[in-house]
Image (spheres, one colour):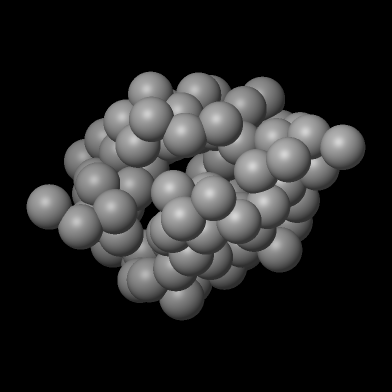
Length: 87
């Protein structure tokens, strides 16, 4: 399963009660009003566990969590070792 599919499935299950209506890969997640700031950290924890990556605090930004595609791109960069430093 692709990172995009895994992330979409997680968001739909946890915050959308299983109804993916309105969630497309480029849909701005904040416009759906489904995830609050505490939820973002839950999502970060999921990403770290599922993809065996570390998401540095500086990478937790609106741009990186704007959409499923943006989150998938972040995961890809971190898996490739880009942006993983904590300095």
